[in-house]
Length: 93
Image (cartoon, rainbow, N blue to C red; front, side):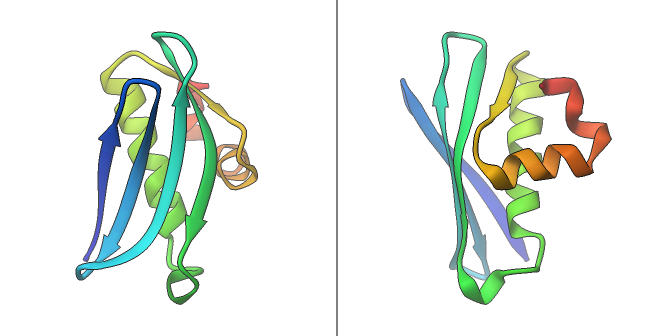
């Protein structure tokens, strides 16, 4: 089962995806003030390409943004594409 954990630091953070204990991907972000995060990089391990790992990390970021009244600036091309394809998550842009 895919699991996504968040590590949040003062200026940066990341969402780390694991599948059955193995690292499947990571998505990093930076804080832009107190109410915005910038998704700057998404990386999925080759063995997990095409399995929805990247999308799951973006959705976890959306959940975090909604819970904390934040906006997301998707600078990473993958995150940008995910927001373009999924209208239901654009409320956090």
